[in-house]
Amino acid sequence: MDLFTHAFIPYIIARIAGRSERDSRIFGFGGTVPDFDSLFMWIPFLIPQAYAFTHRGITHSFFFALPFSAILLYFFSRGEVKRFMARFVTLDIDFSARSLLIVYAGSLSHIFLDWLTTGGLPLFYPFSETRYAAHIFFYVDMILMVFSALAVIAFLTKRLSARQRHVVLYALLFLSLALGATRLSLKASMTDKNMSTYPTVNISEWMVVQKGKDAFTVFQYNPITKEGGMSHLFPYTDKAKVQDLLDKANTIPTVRQFEFHASDAEVFAQRVDSAWTLSFFDPTQKAFMRNAPSYIRHHFTEIVVKIYDDGTIELIDG
Image (cartoon, rainbow, N blue to C red):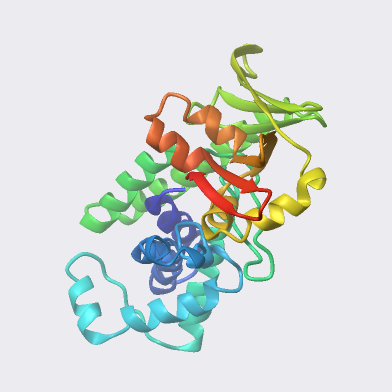
């Protein structure tokens, strides 16, 4: 989800639940906290082993969201920062256990909203690097983003009457629920044990992944018109058959980083002369970015590792 939606949805919930304006704004602020991870996205470029310090990484974990909430609460409750922020928004916030509880609750709302989207979150990091996602909304829902942004601007300019503010609150909540119900209904209509479905920007177009014996078939599908689009075939290898090779490849931080970011990291292994070539890829991302420049496609959708018989490991592409 986008930053505006993350701020406004918890604010709406708090106001409708009868919470004070102050608590509602703190709750809304908490809804933006996990996305401050953008401040340290540069770290993995310098220290590849710190791959969890990225967007939708460490701060989107149930466990790390709490200390990160405390750090940001402390920072934004400082007098100098509050005076600066007062130029843009009124946020009467203090560094207390009560405020921390509200901010953390807002962070959890953020995690829940992102869980509804595609891409996945490492909810139980550092105990598990598995990413979880409901795949109902696209990474950023453009409709929600536009209406949330307009609502935030309207509220900040203070040009709305109390009645108008309530209309905006209920309208945006209704829009969110209606979009969610529509997407969920469309997703449910495509349920199949051998098929995974992923949302796209267009609410009527979905990316469908079917897992065969030796390859993934990825294609676009419109559940409303029941029409399919162009399909792509990506061969894969059963990981259990090449586990020893995977263990060796995972000694390379770049491989760990790719697997951590991927919504669904698969591998295709093939023997060439005196070496094994392992191609790690995300089938949905490869299909999504099929028309992107080659550098972007390789960087975000696939990396290749070569493992020689003498034990040498070489990162070929990534």
